[in-house]
Image (tube, rainbow, N blue to C red):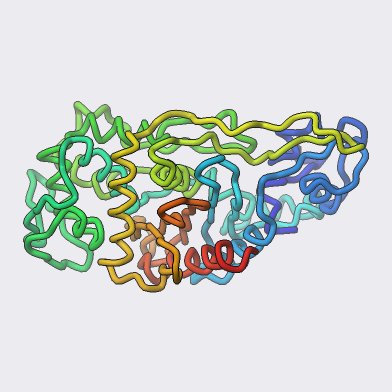
Length: 394
C-alpha cells in the first residue's frame, strides 16, 4: 500500500481526494462509485478486474516497491526517487518517504497532517530543494552551447574571489589545471563558477534551465508538481556572486527529483524533453482500450550534438570520478553527484543517472533529504535500483 499511496492517492468523504484518485476520478468511478479500500485502488491502477473503468499506470511495481524500501532504509528515511523511460516519458517509479496508508485516512488524517516528517507531502513532486552539483549538467549544457569544449582547460586554485562572495570547492580542495570534462567529473565549483561568470552569463544560464523545464507548472501531469525555479530576480539584476552560486546549484535554485529526472532523461534522449506520463491506458470493464496516450516531446531542450557530448562527459563522471559503485558490468552508465547545502542540517544527497548510456532505457534521480555526501547517500540507492531494473528485471 504505502509505496503507491502518493501516486494512487486517497479518497475520503471528509478530507477529499489526491493523486490518480482525483485526476482520473471520472474513469475510476464511472460505474463503481467511490473506491472503498486500497485494494480497490491498486486493482484499478494496475488493471485488475473492477466494475468502472480501469486506469492502468506506467509504474513498474517491482521498481516502485524497491525504491520505497531503499528510501525507508536510507540514513534519514526521507527522500524521493523518480525514474522514467527517457524515450517514451513513461514514469517507472515515483517514490517518496515517509509515506502513509491510504486505507485508514479518515481515522489518521489529523495525525498525518500534523506529523513533523510530513508523510502526506510527495517529496518527489511537491517539495523543493537546492540541487547542488546535479545542476552542473545544466551549466555544462549552457557552456557547451557557448563554445566550451570538453577538452578545454581551466585553472582551479581552490577558490575564486568575486565582489562580496568567494567560491570554494567541496572540502576546500584545489585541482590545478583540469579539462572541462574533469571539472564535471570532480565536481569543481570554482571552474563552474568561472565558466558561468566569464563565458556563459546569467541570461543564457537561466534560459537553459527554462529549456530543461524549470518554471513549467506541469499542469497536464496526473499529480500536482511544484515548479522549479532558478532565482526570484531577473538575470539582469544578478550579481556575479549570484551567478557563481547558481552555476553549482546553490543560491536560490529550487527543484525536486521529478524535474531533475526529466533533465536527465532529456540529456539521455538526444536533448528531447519528453512529456512525462503516469497513465499507460484506460480500459473499460470488459477490457476495451478507451484511451492510450501516445509519447510526445515537450520541446528540444538542447541540440542532439550537445546532448551527446554531455552524455559522454557524464559517463566520465563515473569513470574519472572513481564512482565504481555506480558501474554495471557490460553496461555504460552516465551520472552526476550533488551534495547540496540545505541551510538546515546535513546537506541533501543527490544522484542523477541514466543507462545504458549508448541506448538509454531508464533515467533516474534519487534525493535523500539531509543524506550527506552524494556518493554515500543517493548514489548507492540508485545503483541498486539501476542494477535491479537492468539486470534482474524487477
